[in-house]
Length: 230
Image (tube, rainbow, N blue to C red):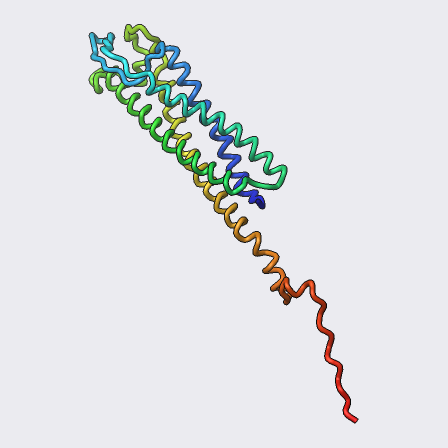
């Protein structure tokens, strides 16, 4: 297919940004998972005294593992597709029609997955902040609570910084997947237009030149010889 450099450059830029955003999801979530001993999620707890928190039940680890999976997939997919985009720019061609359709389908599916992961992570952070601040009854905010000893069997010294960064980055990943879905659809439309209009171009060229393709192989008729009557 004929290459549309503007679409491909925009898609390549979106892939590069998604790699950076995906890393900003994976790294904080990995650090938080290590500090919380693989017990992140939405905790069910109750405050103790002025500085002690009693967690009755931890949320499912899959809540944070899902967000980490979206981040890892975004990094790997962005690296692979970014390399393909550079290859297409160098070779001056684009995906086939079927490959463009698969790219649109995959982008839309991961868009919904990343949106769901963003909502889950945001709700988990809100639930944890409500627990550690006793719904705003404590004299410190959620960001300040990471500096307060909570006497838990986990390291809470930087939980808010890590989860807040991962949350913002995951929403950026969702926005980038939306942009990639739109760009993939535009590339599919471009490929479809090239596929439809390709066979028609020789015919249009012949019509512009003033003769049909069926006449190109036959000799042009000689002018009629005038008859002279004596």
